[in-house]
Amino acid sequence: MQNFEISVLDLAPVKKDKTIHDTFQDSLSLANHAENLNYKRFWLAEHHNMESIASSATSVLIGFIANGTKKIRVGSGGIMLPNHSSLVIAEQFGTLESLFPGRIDLGLGRAPGTDGLTAQALGRNPAIINQQFPRQILELQRYFSKDNSEALVRAIPGEGLDIPLYILGSSTDSAFLAAELGLPYAFAGHFAPEQMEMAFNIYRQNFEPSEYCDQPYVIACINGVAAETSEEAHKISTTLFQAFINIIRNDRKPFAPPVDDMDNIWSPMEKNMVLQKLRYTLIGNQAEIEEQIKSFQDKFNVNELMINSHIYDHQKRLDSYSIFRKAKDAILKI
Image (cartoon, rainbow, N blue to C red; front, side, top):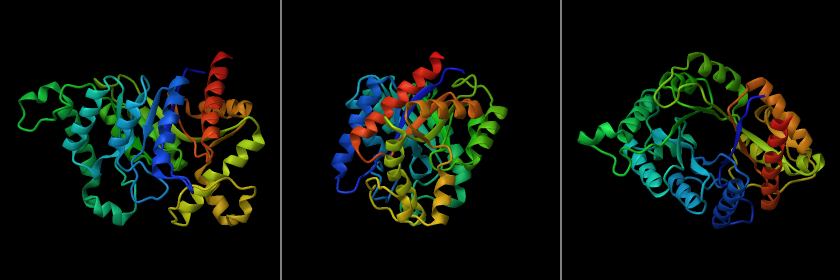
């Protein structure tokens, strides 16, 4: 098996009976923990109008996390670019890169990260998204370029800085775009696994080397819940299951503690829907996680696994990432 990196995806989850201040402190604690375990990067995802997710001001939160860590890369997974002006994002990430040199990533998605009414409030125009998103990426590249120094509109800070761009996708559309632009590609397998295999194939088959990336680089974002015992892992994973039930029911309430029996919460149809959405979720003790990672890599052979752990108890969430680190190291020693 080829070497692969492991990273963290954090949605800044808000838990029942906890404050948003608690959420941000937990995110910082997790980032420090991941840094100590030599995780590659720590990404935060832009969402809006969700009582359960507090990462709406993504650039601000990235600054908070980067300021509280020393070496781990910190970035967006992603910034939903059509929600924003390209110039504003160039200035924000230029500021972040100037404050924390060599540590900032800019992952970019085209989805709204919210519902239709909130997307409208953000100023999106759905009729031009498919044209707007590629154009905005090219605008960002221009703003970050040294060659833009003679332009009438410049990103200060931002101009001349090396800020890696990553294209995010939850369908096959962005796979074509990432391949055409020669940029790394991250797929949202943690909530939209249906087209992940097809998207990776499209990206790899159509990839055009660029000054930014000479060969395909694939990141798979997946859910992961690990514990000392298999029984404990499956018990604490019920927080994740309940979160997906809430999505199905359009209920955005905070994340709930684990339960003993999900059958008291979901219907058979809901259970089937959730398990389909979580088909590539890794759950178990270390030995089971090792086998699941090997099986996943046999199928997808990604460059990087980005793990999202919706675990209610913060210490158990930290422990889960420790077990994933041990599992990855054990696999590569075989």
